[in-house]
Structure formats: structure tokens, C-alpha cells
Image: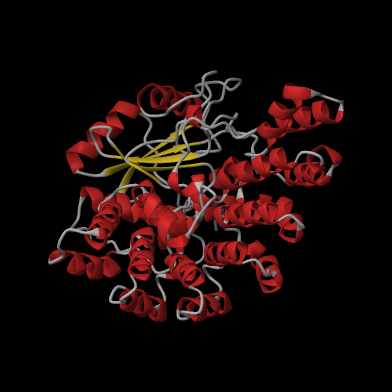
Length: 465
């Protein structure tokens, strides 16, 4: 009887019996290899274009390429869009297959990057664009929404569904309860590095090591400040460790204003892992430093910071800081049931209206919970205008269409006045506007004194250093 080598049997089709069929290829995002053709296809099929901007050698970008883009749920959502990946590979053979993004050559990925820079992305004065960055567009190249820097799975899923609904309101896709708007969400535009006053591009691992070496080597004055700020956007334990030591050092101890500027910049631009740099600020003896620290932690929204936030929230005596703790807990503890209970209790107390309003706004990050939804809807009927405004802002912030129905109903028969104007601003956010449309309303009803630029956009005309 003829015999086949084992490797030959394994290669034979399935009719040779169970257990010997070749393994199926791993599922992956279907990346298009031609920029212009992708948009033509999207327009013809009335689909959204998903553009992912990536770079090699930086931790956040590597995690996205190697983990998130290979996640089964993300792949499923990507089947509803036309997908493009942009990345530069200056030292690779353009004809060679790209293992980082299977199905493409290095040259194809690089060409998408060139076209994306020309037609969509915004660059800094020296020509740098932010990577990672995710942009959702229609078939004519109009930006629907975008998110600069690192993005989580639940945030990216929210972006897929929301962008698809902008183009096709009748789509059967629904936002899962676990999904939520990204903290850096930009509606209708892309990130502009030139507005932030600092070098906003994350460093590669090699660049990070070189920058830290320069700083340890004794850089002085403005050169030292510039180098320090370049580290703040880089997803790396080395960056976190270095910045933590710097903030505790004599240089910042002697310059309180500069320390708060660094804290503010971490809040608006750093990856969530930088929360560790800020933990010491929660016990600072200066009220203003504690306040800036808590607001920065709110913007970072790291779940890992919840334990520290709860610990120092209990110890905090100053109401102006305590109200910001509630906001930080809402953001960082969005998946934490005990934090949600704490916020609901604070949101139900009229003892201090400012604390109550901030707790209500913090519930925006918990809108998938039935008790939270019921409380926000009830607050829309309150006598206190500021409480109604806080609830309306929370609903707008959540971008939850089911909750939005309550706002739309409230706006139907409203006469002109502060409440009608508040409802209009919140509805503009729910209809696709940026949170900047409710910034002044949030500032008033929550008594804010520190900008949240990560959420509302840069304060133009200021430099964060």
C-alpha cells in the first residue's frame, strides 16, 4: 500500500477525515491597499472609512497593532467599514510583505500614510503627525470623528458604531453597554498639534532613552523644559518612572507654578498610565496643587487610580477639591460598582449643591446603569436650575441616545430662557457636536476653575509650560 508522509496528509482536504484539515487563517482586519480606491468603494457602498495611523517602536502603537487590531470583536466591527492603515517603514523593502499588517506590503502601508498626511491629518510645525490616531470618514473624505493617541477597546467600539450611525441612522448596530465615548473624542475634525503649545508626538523607545539620557546629563533652561515635555505623551514605564522622580525633585519643589503646569499637561496629553506620577500630589499640603492633581486624574481616567482617589477623597476637607474628586472617581471608576454607589449617594444629597452637581455630572461615565439613568432623568424635573443643567450635561456627555429622548422631550415646549438655552447646547452635543459646546455650562453649574482640555479642547492662546 502506498504511504504518504505525515506533512502530506495534513495538507489534504477535509474529505480525508476529521482532524486533518489545515488550520484556518487567523481573523484580521481587512486593510485596503489603495487610498483612493478605498474612498471610492466607501462612497459606492455608503460605508464609513476607518483610518488607523500607527508607528513602529512605541508601546501604545505596538499594542494597537499587535493586540487591539487583532481582537475578535474589533475585527467584527471592522467588517462594517472600509479600513485603511497608515504607517511609515523607511528602511523596509516596499515590495516586501508587512508582517505588522498582514495582507499588505510595506510600500502600500507607507503610501496610505503619505496620502493621509496630505488629505486628512494635521501636522506640527516640523511636519510631525500624531500616532496612534484613529479617524472615521465618509466616502467623500469628510471627517465624522477622530481620536488622537491611545484608545481602548470599548472606546474604539463606540467610535465604530457612532460613525456608522452618522452615515446610516437606520443601521442595526447598537452601542454595547460596556462601550463609552473616548476622553479625547473630536467630532468632525482631527487633532491639531499646533494648538497645544508643546511637542505632542509620542517618542519611540530609542528617542525616549536618548531624551532621558540628555536630561540626566544636565540639560538646563528651556532645553531641559522642552525635553521634559516631550516625554509626557509617551506610553512607557520608563517615562512614568522618570517623570515621577522629576516631579518629586527640587526643581519642581521650588517652582509651584511650573509644577502645576506640568500636572495640567499630564492631564490633557499623557497616557492613563501616568496617573502614578500624580499620586503624590493628592497629599500635597497646597490646596491648589491637590486641585490640579485631581483634575488631571479625572482627565486620565485610569481605573488603576480609583483606590488612591477613594483613599484621599475620604481625607480631603476642602469642598473645592472634594467636588473634583467626585468627577475623577466618576471618570476613573466607570466600571466600579462601589464608586457608582458613592456617586449616586452624593448626587442625591442636597447638603452641598456644588458637590451634588459634580456627582451628577460624574454619572455621565456610568450611564449604562439603570439606577443612574433613572436618577439623571429625575434630575431633569428638579426645581433647581443648576441641578437640571448638571443632569442635562451628563446626558450630553454620555452621548446616550436613549437618555437623549428625555432631553428632546424637555426641549419641545420650552420658552426662551436659561433652561432652554442649556437644553439647546446639550442637544447640539448629542447631535454630533464637541463637548466644547457645553464647557461654559459645565463650568457654571459645577463651579469649575481649572480647564479640562482633554475633554473640551485646548485653551487657545496659552502655552502649557
